[in-house]
Image: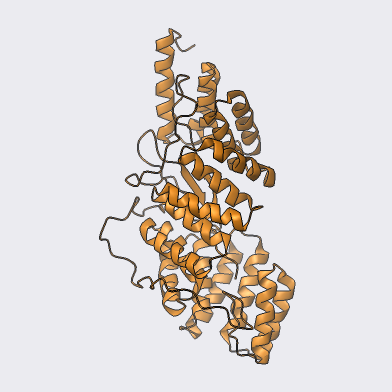
Length: 413
């Protein structure tokens, strides 16, 4: 089945605004001791220089959840991670993560054809085969799960954490697959699918419980581990999520989405070099994946390797020119290399795509300040402040801007 993708892209923020800062100074890195900022919530890392903010389908800390790395010796989830044994080779007539069982009978043949079509994004064909399988075995849970998977893919709803908390279609699908789990409590794929739907609805605790059961029932399914990793991130358990993403990548070694998720978890733990390695492999497997390129570029920025980051970020923008976060990160890399005019133009383009991207306003302000355009810089910071008055980065930059004015004898107009 399709891999759950945690990451929508990493976002970096230039936090110092004074022009005296060297162009090649390192970006803020995700220190292991610092709690990662909240995603799809109002939470932010404390202090004026938080680490780069990962944007993805699961937040670093869900509202109300404990934030930051798990303390050493903390208990892992109730279902312990399996030993890292090599994955079994796929059996004939079975797609990894699919619903067919490899038995070769008529029902299984229909499921296999549905799985192949679903993996190839041929949703209408997949729906036909799963419907055929349901006619052959109305009480078998597999065809119904297949039809739910197709319905979710056809809905157009983003498979991000809390992407559609009030969506009636998603709620109906969750109820539908919930009926399958009630009738077939030991059928793991139904547990996985219900957990995914609960994540989209933003119900992290319920998803976590469902997906822990799924991993117990389907220890060899990479998607069960991957989805559980998302749920763990959504409940503030980044260290435990890393275990699951690592296992998913072991089970599905040539899937770039698994590697991207693993890289994200490493970034959230402050393990930047490990993240770079995971993203590099993802890019090698999917060189035209804009997200993989953007993630690798941003991780390289966090490793203070802006010269290596630039071509990946440029390629990400080329592949997805409407993604404001990719543009903002490219501008940051340009700024790191001292190309201020180019960076300012890139930030402005990002804000044309999304004028509510607060970090792009902050980055634009710092670049303008470095150019000595202090009034314009202040206006950019004020835009970011209006979007999120609680963001400590804005206050830090405005305070530094005030000090810069004093040092230059230029009072606020």
